[in-house]
Image 1 (cartoon, rainbow, N blue to C red):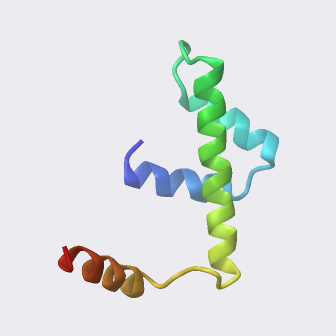
Image 2 (cartoon, one colour; image 1 turned 30 degrees about the vertical axis):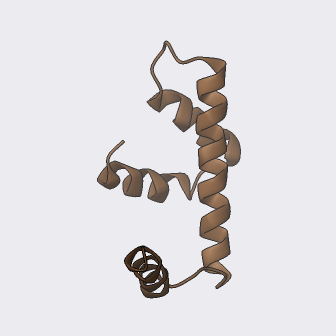
Length: 77
């Protein structure tokens, strides 16, 4: 999935019930997908939704701060 598709998918998924989100995920996966693959993709969706909710609550770290911390860490080496 490309970034553009991921953004579009998030916009569509935000209006779906959890059951419909799972259906949409299954529709995007190949017919040969394993149960383990499905579980992995569900876990990713859950983590993304949790992260988005955290950001909406103002619990995230601003991009500039993360960039500065990484730059300081990697320049020090």
